[in-house]
Every structure is written in structure tokens, then in C-alpha cells.
Image 1 (cartoon, rainbow, N blue to C red):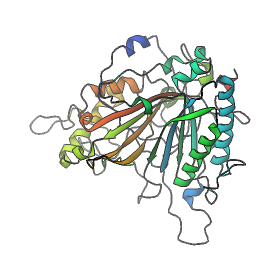
Image 2 (cartoon, rainbow, N blue to C red):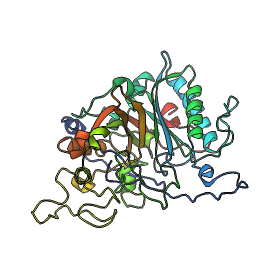
Image 3 (cartoon, helix red, strand yellow):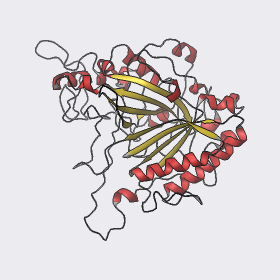
Image 4 (cartoon, rainbow, N blue to C red):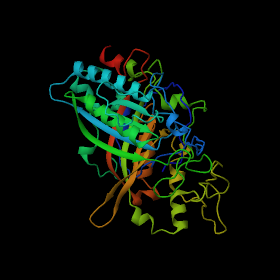
Length: 424
């Protein structure tokens, strides 16, 4: 539920580092907040004509490119269906096996994103479908480097995240050697990719955890608009956009990495992944005004409580007749603003989830929060710390799983993702 929206097109990046001590910045933890994420961005799709002659709808014909400067699934428009899955390398598997696995995965991803069968063992699940804007993204966890004898190539930015006071983390559903993000506008296409990736793992790696998510389908609204989360809030108004001059510096590792970074991460990014449960029964007991005060924006259209439309700049100093701040001091939208966090920014690109109900009928639902940045210490961590210290939303959410992954740059034609690391 961050105050930012998803960008609409890919871009490249450069990131600068200063001499601030990572150890010192990581030294203090404490926080309950979240940065609940943005499903925003809203690239519009025209509704398909109601005619049997159309062999493929506009939704199914969307295609993302596998090869490129950056991996897909970072700045592409949000998709309707998502799967997140982490793997651990099998006992005895090392650098050689990991390289072969990434080669297989990259070939499968390239085929599926083009709307082609996965290979000779294709399951035919998506036989009748187009690419449906499928993206497959690969990343490496902290433990991957020790398992493959590549400790010297582990980036400093991959240092473990600090503990936050809101954490109730299930270690079995956190971290992992390898991470795969799958997104598509058709659920069968997304599942087909998930199954193909899992089968390709073979004896080299086993699934550590897997999570399923969703968003509003493209074309489901009368006009393109920022999406809503499961709390009913317009979610994603202030995400950085590729058109902004400093977008590349904030989101992607530069082509000439600085101190502490690794050359193989050029044009890559870092993904923070959090399973954030929304305590919906408690949230829905609030009045409309109570919910809007927690967020700092109108529920109807996402406009700031200080007035104007969704994209109107929020007036943090505006008061009512009684002299009270119109946007409460602990409102989520106030606290997450980059100008309130030393310019810290990230691209939030999450999926909602619903995993049923517990024995008391309480929904297990919320956000699969995914954010992208050139350095999590200067992106996710400072914002999350500030949320911990006084975000009004913190009493309505619970962080239940967490991961941090280094996502290298895109693969060129004839290459596989991670080749510069594994064969460098």
C-alpha cells in the first residue's frame, strides 16, 4: 500500500554510492511498517470485440521480451496472475549444476514468453493461449554464493536485511538460493510457466517455498487506472516512473558498478520480497474516515486528504478549522513519501494473495510485496524503518515472510541469465 505507482515501460539505469557505512546503517533496526506496495501503473487494454472470428484476444496477444538490457518483470505493466517460487540447490550441486540450471531456465523462459512450447516435454497446458504478457525473472539469494563457491562475487548490497519489529517471519517461507518471479495476464499461462520451471530444476534444486498472487485483469475497468489492494485503497500513486531523470540511478545497478558492487550485476536490480498479511477483519471495522486517515488519501479516487485528484501533490502542512493536520502525522502516505525519507525510492510491483481462511474464519489474505531498487539499504530499509516508528497502518498488517535477491541484468541473444557470474 505504498504511495507510488508502477511504471509503464522499461528503462536503463545508473546508480551512485557514497561513503556511508553499510554496517552503521544496518546497525539499528526496529520497525513495524511495510511499504505495502503498488499494483499501480495501469496500462490500459481495449476490450476484445464480441466476435467468434477473433482467434486471440488483446489480452492473450501481449508479449514481453526475454532478451534485453534488464530482465523482464521489473518495469513491465502489472499482470493479472503471479507466482513467486524460491529454490535451494540440492546437496552436492554447485557452480556447474547452477550454470546448467540457469541455462535451461533461460531457454524455457525465452520460449514461453514468445508463446512457444516449453520444449520436448511441454505439458500442453497453455497450448491454446498466446504469450499473455508472460514474464519470468531470476534472482540469487545470499546463500547461493556460498553453495557455489562464489562468496567473493556476492554483492555488498545483498547483505541480510535487518530485523524489523513488525516481523513475524516464517523462516521456511523466506529467502532461498534462487528466486523466480512469474507474471502473466492468463492464469493457465502463468501456471504453465511455473510447472515448466519446476520440472527444469530436476535434480539440481528443490522448491523451498512458493506463493500465488493476483491483480485486477487488464481491461477490467472503464478506463486505465491505478489498481486497488485488498483493503480497497487505490494503491500505487507515487511509484517512480522511467520518464524521471533519476529513475535509472534509483532502480538499476550502473553499467560501471561502484565500490562494493560486482560487475556481473551491471544493469541488474535488487528485489525485496515480503508476504504481508492484511488483518482485514480489523481494517473493515474502521469507518470510511478512519481508513482514509490511516492512509492519508481518499478511498474513492486516491486523492490526498489535503485536496485535489490522485496525482495532486500532497499538502503536508494543511490544517482544518481546529488546527489539526488534514493529513495525519502518522498517515501511511505521508511517511512513505520519498521527500520524507531522504529521497529513498523503489519500484513496487506486488501481487495480492488469498490463501483461504483459518479455523476462526479469518482470511489469510494480503500482499506479496515486491520492490525493486539499485540498493535496498537506500531504498527499502530506510522507508521500512520509518514506518516501524509510527505508521498508522502497522496495526492492520503483519509481515510473515521475507527475502532479498540479486537480480542480474538481462541476457543478450545467445546468453543465459547469470552467465557473467557463473562463467566469469
